[in-house]
Length: 364
Figure 1 (cartoon, one colour):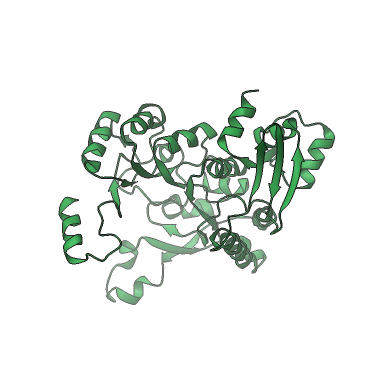
Figure 2: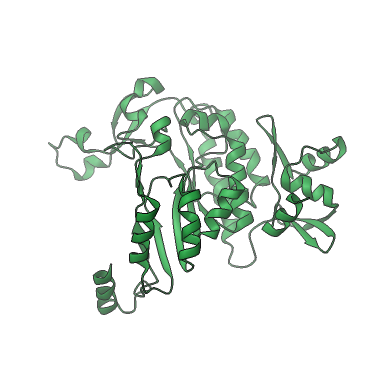
């Protein structure tokens, strides 16, 4: 990228991207998708030339990163992989942590990461991730063949907030055969999770070439598969549009069939959630356990007002670590205040805290 950067400085010296450490360097460590090899997400049209997953060795990745970042004060490296090789948690990230202290990385990840995984990413210099969350409804995630569920998706958002890891994700809707109840559950959940990183957008799913929706539409009750209308606006009249197009539409039943307002309500709820995080003054909403000496408290600003509850160490541990030692009274207290959400038969902890507090409570 040396020639690009030198020309950028010469011809656009006032550009905010003119500095060598002011723009992202794209770099690829793997191709294909190790999850897609097992279960192809129904809407995914990536990897049309082959789902087979292949990754660079840690030694090769380290050598190429060293060449890319040589002489830079701060390096912004955007990994263009569809999904990070899972083995990198053990054999690459620890080396990046020790050998590239000034690197600023972006990676795309599967959503079912643990708190330890998130900690490893942050220590290695990963500052931003794109997570394949897509929904906070287990039923919708099953329709997508995502291999995760609502509890895991909420957990990873919580872990990212705990470690200050910036998250990109989208909330999808408009799936074939989706149920209205699935979106109603998400809508009822959103007011209680606004302290977690919001999606960038709530957007309808699109049928893409190379996806299961495209190759096997009848399996998903999709009929009348056709290119999106926009292609006909700029391609020649005699062009084989169906062979050229990447995005398609079809006829099928969705939740909007039952309630025409559901998509608009979901979009509005996500926009309001995002506004809470993008306000020019103040911090994002919080549901945070704090510690001062031997005293613990819980600060809750999710409804726009600050409420502070004193906590015992035991209650702080229960809220943060998902302890199953809740007595009936404490559990009722936590559920009534939406500090814990019952989802899919499990209790999902929502409170966050500084990593040091989490570590201290886990140690006892």
